[in-house]
Amino acid sequence: MDIKDLKTLIKMVTETDITEFELENAEDKVVIKRGCTAAPQFQFQQPVSYQYAPAAPAAPVAAAPAAAAAPAAEQEQGDVVTSPIVGTFYRAPAPEAAAYVEIGQIVEKGETLCIVEAMKLMNEIEAEFKCKIVKICKENAQPVEYGDALFIVEKL
Image (cartoon, rainbow, N blue to C red):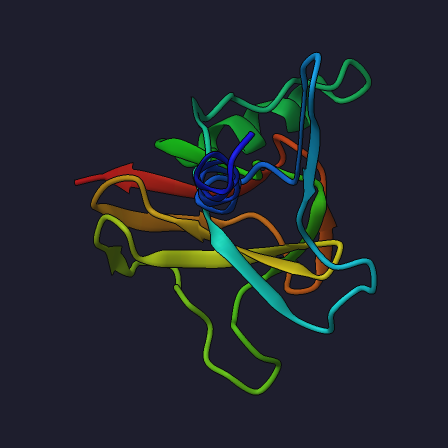
């Protein structure tokens, strides 16, 4: 394998989110790994896309049938912005900074809604389309699981 081929492979790995690449043939073996072994204090990653799911009505509790009707009436309608990863939910870029979004705010496509930190990587969650924030489902610095509801939004 010549140097030009190696440079092409390195460029391919660095332009994608591949962290390890291995190629072996009869004559050569190439292993390319990227990333640091020590955990950095802060490292920002490219924005992560998120999934939308229609808001589901609250499931009635069998022990309290009268109380089950009240949450269904209060259930906000709209699309649910869910967490694409397991991590910690942050409403602002820093503890003393203003929150990215507030209830009732109109958000343009591509604007940051929040950050989900996973293993010291700050993943910005962006709006997929123009929308209005109806509800913020998580508290600041609260742990989130994959698929947890972060926001309920209304498409505009």
